Length: 68
Image (tube, rainbow, N blue to C red; front, side):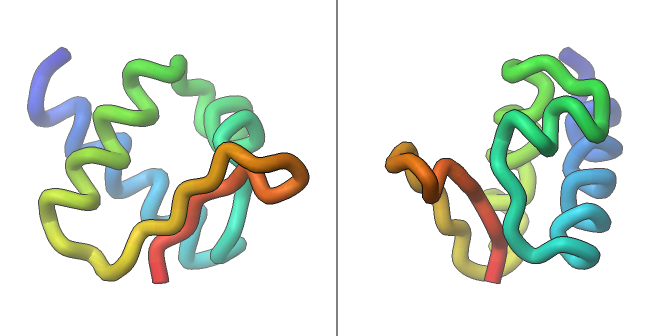
């Protein structure tokens, strides 16, 4: 996957999180039409940019991520 594509997807994810603050990974992938590899590569990009704290949970019903 190209770095430019990862960066673009990171920007798309950031914009969705600004609107919704918290969203499930499944909802995010569906909304942006990303597969899991593309989405989590973009999340890694955001984490690398130090965009704030990242909250990730695998507990239901909390299965979500957000950047605070």
